[in-house]
Image 1 (cartoon, helix red, strand yellow):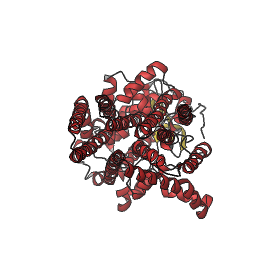
Image 2 (cartoon, rainbow, N blue to C red; image 1 turned 60 degrees about the vertical axis):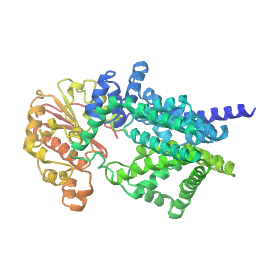
Image 3 (cartoon, rainbow, N blue to C red; image 1 turned 30 degrees about the vertical axis):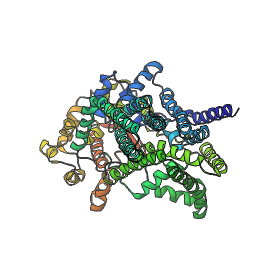
Image 4 (spheres, rainbow, N blue to C red; image 1 turned 180 degrees about the vertical axis):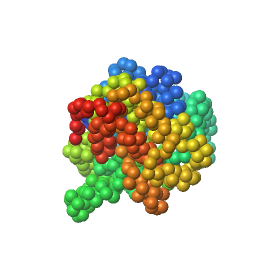
Length: 588
């Protein structure tokens, strides 16, 4: 009867986690990263996907391969696409149960599975059409096989570990760091155990473990040319891919808050401004009381549980060291400007944190009242609070802009200019992708696309720019009142001149990347201190986007414009005598 009660509880936990993950999957349309994922996955298998990732992206192919066949079977409707991710997220709950059960007991498994089921970040990323649900599932499986190997050093468990780690390597670039730290730290632990115990079988286990990791590495070698190509692209670029978010110590605090509290920041933004707004709503004392119950107490509980776990079981110490090494790597690279402590990156630490917390809580004497408190807090928060992760709305930018462009009744003779992500979002905006002008400013600057850069700058100038001198070199370009002559000639000759008489030109400007208008750029560049801290990529994309708009206004007739804090859409027509007789949809 006790066993059946555990099975019933496990079923309830999985159902609860599934309800949070499958709730409102078709909300708000796709956002840019999801559109990019869809665009890559719809390429031909396997060479089309690999070629696109090689030239236009930096990620590994496994998730795109799987999504490709999911689309073939079920289509590419938004709900269906997110359903695919939610399956991985829900399956992971059961894996956490198996981990807790392997470590101690079915009860520990239930606690661990429950923590995974109500984890706000796991819920959020289980609803996104990205590789995060898959990489999190694979990381959990990797830890399961590692713990099983520790309990029973069999070839079966090692084979499982090797296969899953290979999946991690082929899913996400940073997964290589996790696999490396796992191998090195666990190997160190095995060597210490060999030195202390002097058991002959430990030598065999070490040998098999090393051979498994070597074989896994050999199977990853076919991907190394792509891996080194992406490193070369990053090194060759004069921009830092992560310059849109500068590291602060507060980022570490937010990461911890996201792991242990239902009050989460999914996207990096001005945290202090958010806290200030809540203080204004609830008052300083009211906010502090809420913060105590929602953030501070849960964090203390989880950290205490982790400490207890580390001191109770040696394998828990090994897991903690893997977490500490991985998170330290993220912090150090963020401090160096090569990374951002964004929730979608720090979420990779969660599998280990949940395992440690689950076991630690099972070892606490008064765990029942603690679990009741966490259950009430997390479930009520996730159900009721409108900005909790199951309710967070993704950006509606692209669905809104698509509605506007559809209202313009564009034909094959018309052209659309998209300043950000043309290589992906062109398929989302129009069924007639041939009318999208092939100028992707994000790709141009981040990937140092010489073909496009040479349409804006002289070849000698491009060659002279490096990461070290980019801000100095580009400053004169950013403060220019007018578009560069070379870029003007390109837009006028290759875009405007090729428009037939009476044809329309629609321009979409993403103001989340092209953040600054001409006056804002002038103000930033006039302040040396401000100029050094602002994202150079966003300033360059802003400048070129503003130039396209300026050239279009000088050569064409503006028929319609619609503005939003995050985007702008303009419609021009060639031939000023042509009547503006189209009714347009206005979107609030």
